[in-house]
Length: 410
Image 1 (cartoon, rainbow, N blue to C red):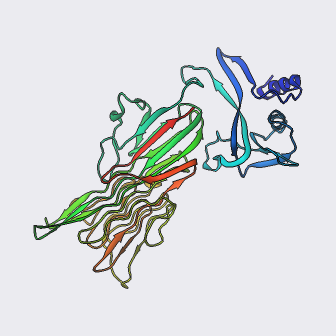
Image 2 (image 1 turned 180 degrees about the horizontal axis):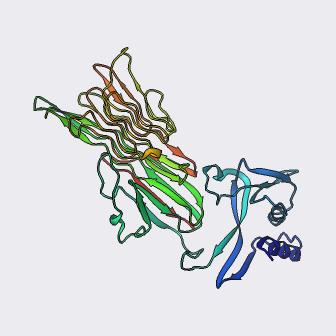
């Protein structure tokens, strides 16, 4: 008898008793114990996947109606709602897609059945007592436009032996099924000083702060995540006279198919005697020149035909734009920062799509643009994305690399 048939039989014995709010089924298979239990989320529902709406008198009845529907994977039930108050869904939050994130609604309850295997050689046991386990992902000591080359920096932490690197992007499997807080911090843009003909004028321009974005997510054991930790922009020199600041890279957390969970935009770089870089943006739009988080930032000027010798930041899906040299690479293209026009390490962008800085423009970020003319320039901050619930946002610190912190809540 299969899993669903056993549950139907159990509910027939219960005969619809609304007092039963929790049911556990245990099956022995190949020496491993499999248990299934009802999981409910108050004031939450799963949108956009309803295949049928019907009337139910209790959560138990709604769950059984789901089991009677072959395509049903989960359900939404609404209190004090007349008529068809039980919605059957053809998806669940355990599916690897950001479209399956639970939304908040007072009086709603989302429910589904969870199957957990006991600990075996290849799987960790589900333990309801486990909670508040932190996993902190860093730049692993790496600087500049390239990401880290090895994960030895995680020795002695909860990530020891759990992270593999793919050209600087960190690959990590979710260890337990449950709710996680994911916090992503974009890297800051570089600060610069004013030096003209080797004379220090005491002038500072500051790179923008990285955005700090967090949300709650339901993740299933074994789900593979891609994590890119942004690196701060580089400060460069030209003929020992002027120092330019590259843009900070964004920090990304996505599913393996590049669907984003959280992206925190990096801060803008800067150039001497010009304005400070913009901070990473808390919304989806990168600042300056109508940039967006999904695409590379634009270059724009009020002076027709003016060449901007700077690079905008890359986005999730497309590279940054440039006046000269090498553009910042988007997340799906590896996320390397932009390179300046060949005069040494002249304000290269940080890993995570940071653009490079040069004489009248600035480095960009994850989708940040650059506006400039012959006397003035400013670099935009990268846009951010948050597909979680219980969302929070703010800013990081100056000269800070990015960071991703994931906490298992249970």
